[in-house]
Length: 378
Image 1 (cartoon, helix red, strand yellow):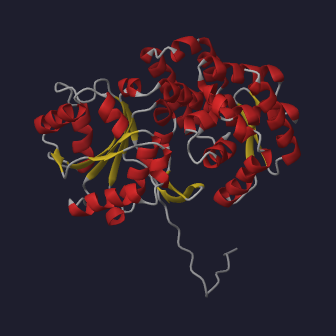
Image 2: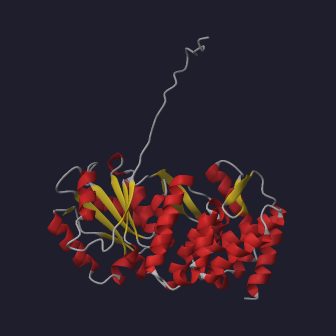
Image 3: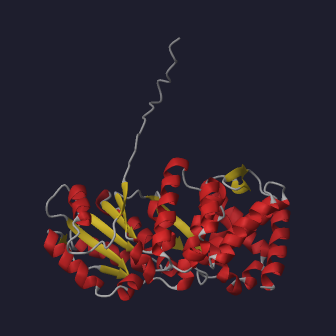
């Protein structure tokens, strides 16, 4: 039977699909390594790609002669710099500076006449990737974007985000736009530029994913946790590749982000994302045990891995936040506004999860009180 059609309405189907490649390249800007320039030429469909570099101040300062190396590399391989690089201070405060960083980048892109066939290269941590992506996705209706993450957290998670977000006042990621990169390029050596806390906090992102998506990755992480804490880049790269491959097969997860995002906002973004996420993981795992969703032994493995890799160091600076359980629970309301649903992801075992439609707020307050008591004894 033919389906009746409403004469007063016309349905239009939009199909927006985009794929990209994640490239692991050692010594990215070595003069004898053409791999990165090949990627840029392919994306620009030109032998002389035109690029605008947006860089995180931390990696610029901590990588010896980085600017000189990049300049020589681009000159050798015919990559044109549309303007001087835009250097951002990095960190979450960059995303909540009343659009100062955003407008600095907008001005540079407009003044340098960056167009649809040109490329924005975002070199930095998650906040820098967000700001560059936020502007690149809107300038001229969208220009090409290459993400080069330089922190462990960005290499594990932020580089593959399908949105770019900016904070407004105390609301984290209040303004978001669709933003899928045209390529992600990873040189794990950049991770050596970060402070110990940023390194360890970034390892927590692997735990966040593995805890609810990949039990074998979780167990593998636990076995090499000491090497990871000691910044063994070879082991980190192996774990990272495994995590990215798993993400491709099983998809991303929002596990523990509702509470982590709220903790960041409550601190005025003094608590870095890398410290907030592990705390959020512990809260949600404790809730899962309280509600008989997860075995205590699985909870212990996850939280022990976080402690052993150093990701829980942020607890020492967060007791005043954890004492405000009702305030943290506002994160559930913010999550509903963002996602359009009260549903929260909770673990049901290693590599397994459930979507709980209406979390038990009293149970969450109970586990937060208990977690505060335990963490205060550390």
